Image 1 (cartoon, rainbow, N blue to C red):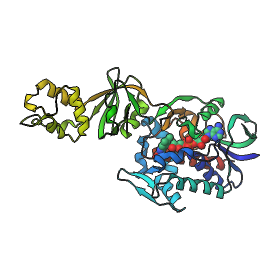
Image 2: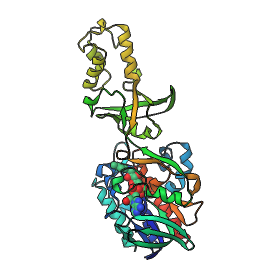
Image 3: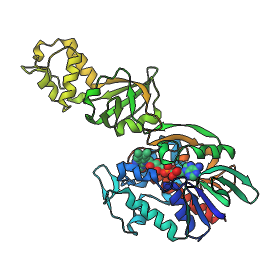
Image 4: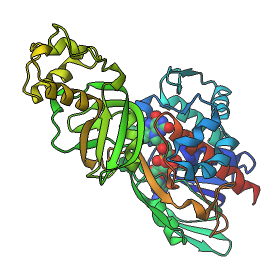
Length: 402
Ligand SMILES: Cc1cc2nc3c(=O)[nH]c(=O)nc-3n(C[C@H](O)[C@H](O)[C@H](O)COP(=O)(O)OP(=O)(O)OC[C@H]3O[C@@H](n4cnc5c(N)ncnc54)[C@H](O)[C@@H]3O)c2cc1C
């Protein structure tokens, strides 16, 4: 079979690219997908509920992709198919959304399957061909376009869109093949690494307290005694370390050996008389609103009992308690691997891709979208939004220039 536009990967970005390109190219667009079903990762998203995007103004999205260097790149795609356009697209096809207090957008049914069905139905309804259980093994450039070698034979394409995702959750099908194809075509990569991942903490003493959360904690990442970066967000104690949006969002910048300093209790809550009067230590510390089990553990580590009157607690211990609650040190033993990371940071380097069209600057007719690019977003719907936006832009541009 020969296709006008071929897309590798029927995940979030590949389906968006397919929908955009079939809009005008009936019957000539084909998506190859290794799995028997499309969108495995999309189905898992948001614990199966799919946090598809965020409610904030689209201009606010720009800073959620890991720093100022990424802003210029993500802007044309995000503005071409923004969060309002995404919601409108699904609403026109019968989906209703709900907005959580934190601005995250989910389908009202809380079923990612409902959104995935819309994407697949739309693509097929416009005449797109979805060829599942087809693994693309090799991509080569030929005169009239591209030759794809698959487990089902060879296919030719005039334009090729790589939508193979990154490397995280390889069981969903994204196993890093797209990085290999991009390199074969002369592209360079920023080394892919797991991101939006929990961390394992060295000499961790809170394994028994897994499940306890801290709301909106300040987190500083220190390397070689220098502050590298910081952020704010909820933290969750796990069996082996830390997770929660505050940790996940900063994980792209972390390395084993880094020290995190976490503000568990706000310094301003340390009023001068907190340790005065006839209170016990336990009563005094309850002022901070932290989980009692956590405070008991902290007191135990100071070899003091919860019922000890504050008046009988020496100044040094009180100072140390204050210091540890306002800047708790955690040393990173390791970061979660590919099976735990929700996304891949790194990927096809952005300078070699035209951000207005998603076309390669090296190989005309080759397009990229989604996580394969050196773009990874914060939690909150930013990754699916970018996958849909960049897929839409790649699909649109590829059919425009046929
Ligand atoms: C557990 C989990 C929860 C998440 N929750 C959210 C969330 O709530 N909100 C959010 O914004 N983001 C979330 N994400 C991230 C988001 O799902 C991804 O960033 C997004 O789906 C990436 O889209 P993509 O199209 O780039 O890649 P994918 O969706 O991974 O699609 C790539 C597709 O390409 C196929 N493929 C790869 N290589 C080949 C090949 N050689 N031949 C044929 N097919 C191939 C794969 O099988 C796969 O179907 C979550 C991720 C995980 C793992």
